[in-house]
Image (cartoon, rainbow, N blue to C red):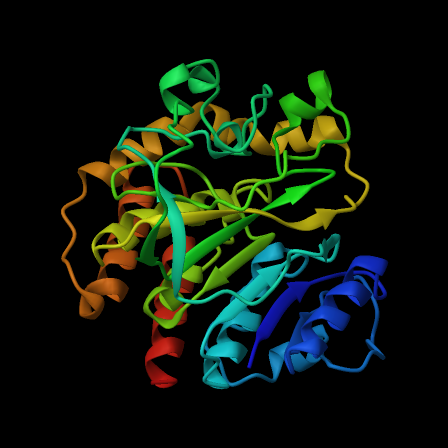
Length: 334
């Protein structure tokens, strides 16, 4: 059974209603994590709503440590999903509606393998337009090696515990793209997914992402970084740890239509500046880490990544007690 997770400070949006409809068709449930702002209730069938007061009553060490008014409260939705022994989790946002191609994914999936390279601009693998995902290094945007790909390569079957679906209409790009090139955007139709081998970096977001138990500890969203970087920096750490499990990352053609909530683009830009300046340094730091292979090392590897992020000054030391609480909660859930 599918468990989907969002966080919101709004009454059910049209996108959320469409998501609930899609989830209910596959006998699934939507977990909705509220916050200080927003509704006190969420009167919608097939959705379990957790307002702030209910979150603080959850039996998790992380619950009282998470900041109020922060996207990282979504971590509690993940823990609830773990406690329900969800066989896999789907996370998205309240402005992403499933499209006609949306369907539950499987741990084993077919995808075209990408030849190894330091960075892959996945958006350019699905189109020929000047576009790049949020978190992609600006000095790599015009590097053709990041998007060169033989589209005739036969698809193969991969085991992949993290899979990302793209979004049409308003893909997840950075504020620079929106300030300079913004328009409605649809990727050309394709049935092919793409697999990135270990060692090849591409940021992924929290807007249409599938997770399986081997990668569950890697879902942790940091609290002590900017809102526009929390899922991006999570994605870098998750990829680095995923490689130690022997897995790459899969990107699927668009699965959702993002009817984007209103944003202040200059504020978005300000929130993204730490990424523009530091993302290449962050991935180099993570690349240089000596991590242990295998599923038994995932928790320790995650902790080592955050300790390295703190040691290099990318994230303050205030983050570490939250990571420890997260891992302790996961351990207590078995």
